[in-house]
View 1 (cartoon, rainbow, N blue to C red):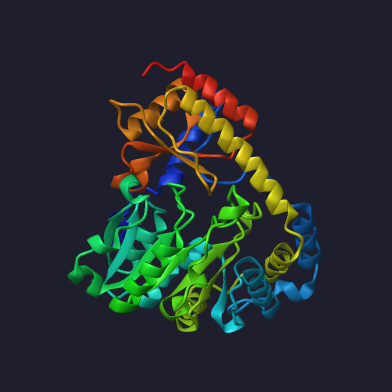
View 2: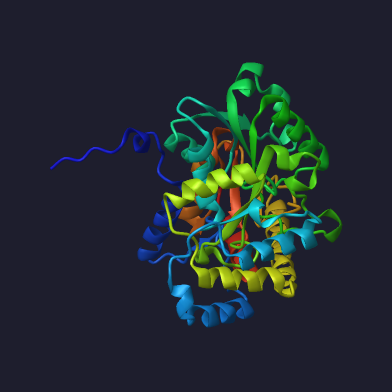
Length: 388
């Protein structure tokens, strides 16, 4: 028999990070000593107190049933507590919905608010799900280039009036993946005005808000600003903050009508987040945050080691203020893909081509700080031996 993919699947490029992982595994099978700086998956373990909480929760028979709905009241209260403590934002429980990782909610918001032919404003380069979710909803992505001259912020003034008036949704992501940029308050104020004027939903992806390197410059939340709840929601995740990528838990919060729309989609697609994981998440959000501080220190040492090493080799790279990514310009005379291929073939180093996350990423590659300092030093040593 011959099977035919849905036309929407035909529009998709191979999922970037699956392809990177595939190439890494192929190299390992050939005996290569791979240093993986590609996929943004923390190498550190989930903190012990969170694991212990999960072990206790999974033993409770009541947690073995369907966890229908927007998440337990206990979990949503914990999210509300965390937001108040971290950002001084007040959230009611009906303004919060548990997600099976923020990726799931980011992919599903389109199905609640985007009709065929509707425009979605998508930053690029960016997390691929913003665009793939648009494709699955039969929407049309209008890409907003993130350029160095604009501090890797979308230029809202450059969006044509007719596009802005037809747009239903705009994605933003700060601290940014892949550029590691941080958005200032002026940007959020302007964004909210832009969204109100054009009746656009703001979908703010804040997955990296807790990975920052200066206590005096903590990343901001979109929801901190006046009228933010009128126009949008914020997606968050425990994956990066608490090294819980495999656990699949996050949330969306903000405008309760938008949250309810996402929840309605979820009610028809899944049965909620496993209750034991929700209980472990409560422990993560309400306990002492020293484990997060420790992780930040580790990432900072790795960041400093990689950036210092690349600069000594003549690479043009900026020290990131947040996220666990380093966004580096590539040597002259090569494309992003050629540099990534050269690093893999000649140095057994895996990283991400900038244009793989959007055409404006051409000329850059992304390094993830997800290996030890010793391995980063080894990576620099290997790169120094490559003839460019």
